[in-house]
View (spheres, helix red, strand yellow):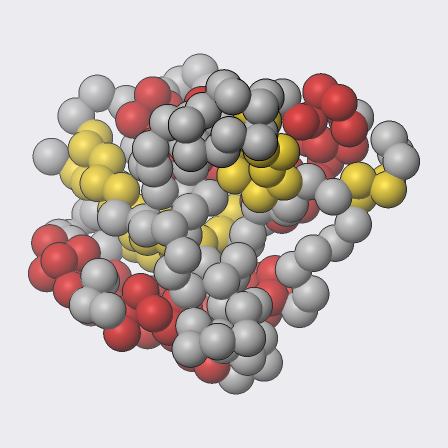
Amino acid sequence: MATIWIIGDSTVDNNTPPFRGWGWAMPAFVREGVEVRNHALSGRSSRSFRAEGLFEPVEKGMAPGDLLLIQFGHNDEKEDERHTDPETTYPEYLWQYCQAALDRGAQPVLITSCERRFFTGDKGLLYTHGEYPRAVRVLAGEKGIPLCDLLKDSRALYLSLGQEETAKLFVRLAPGEHPDYPEGHDDKTHFNADGARELCRLVAREMKAWPELAGFLKEEI
C-alpha cells in the first residue's frame, strides 16, 4: 500500500474540533489503496519538528513509492527557538526532509504556507509570510522537487470569496459557544472542517498537475 506522509504545523495537522488542518481532509481525496499518515503538529517549525524528534517515525516509516508532503513556515517566522532564516536555515531544513525522503525512495513535495485571513477592505489581502514562500519556490526549482503553491492558491480563493465568505472557512466562535473561548474567537489562521477541505482541495489540484503525484489521487477532485 502506498502512503502519503504529511509533516507541518497547525494549518496542516488533524487538530481538535472545531480546528482542522488541511492534512486532516487528505484521505477524502486519495484513491483506494493509498494510506494517509498525517504527522503535522501545531506550533512546529521546520527546525523544531526535527529537533523534537517528530520526524523520526516518518523517516523510519517511509518506503519506496511513498510521498512526503512538507509545509512549514508559519512558525519559522516566530522570533523564538523555532525561528529559521528564509535565506539560509529555512531552506536547509526543508531540504533535509526532502533528502530523507529521496534516500528512502520516496517522493518529497514542497508546499508553500497557506495565507492568513487579513483583509484590507473586501478586495485586498495582506501578504503575511514575507520571504518564506519565495524560499520554498526557489528550493523546489533548484532541486527539481514538485511544488504546490498553496500561498498563491489560497490567496486566489480568499479574494474570489471576499472577506465575509472567506471567514466562514476559519474558526469563528460566538461568546459562550465554546468553553475554551468564553469571550468568543475570530481566528485568522486556523480552519474549521469546511476550510480544511477547501484548502486540501487546492493542494490536491496542484498535485494532479504533476504526473508523478496524480496517481495517488481520485479522478475527480
